[in-house]
Image 1 (cartoon, one colour):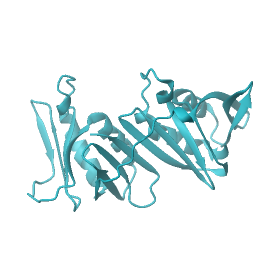
Image 2 (cartoon, rainbow, N blue to C red):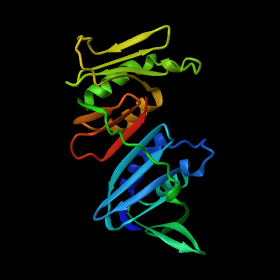
Image 3 (cartoon, one colour):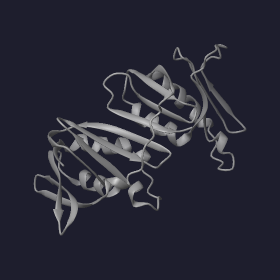
Image 4 (cartoon, rainbow, N blue to C red):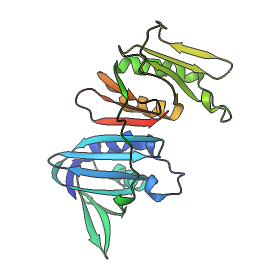
Length: 243
């Protein structure tokens, strides 16, 4: 595996998947980020804590196909310390072990890799229903209601947003912690809902982080147990999580 990428683009991509990295996990593979290079110019960064998965596409040059996994925290620290120039990245073998080498100007670093075969399988939503929703509507709905999410771990059903999605993109979101309630949207009494489910607070935060700078429509797909959010056109990332 080999590619060249602007340091700022790589750093931005790593920041986008951070919400799905759980540093408290006992399994080293779940503290990592998967780096998947596909010709001619695609780099896919993926992180998951088994409940949330985030994939981000980063543009690269001179790519040679390959896949590896490295510790997220160590990689992010190395990238942030490099000058804002082109970073040359490749997997090399040292002492019969694979390492990820990064070279940027006078800076050079090598990080131990993990076996990508141990990476957990991220299930696709095969038979879900999809609605197209404007980014501004998603952002407005969650920002207006998130202050009312419960933080009481004994009431997990209130630690998130009750969300109703309709085929025409109508979105109703409710946050309630037992003493206060916030409602976004209008109950129109329509039939044929795409979904009615509770979206956990951590997944809400991951979605907001991903779409905060976007201004387009998004496909929101759910099968009742999982939800996936990605741009309708020119998707550079996707957020998926359990309901």
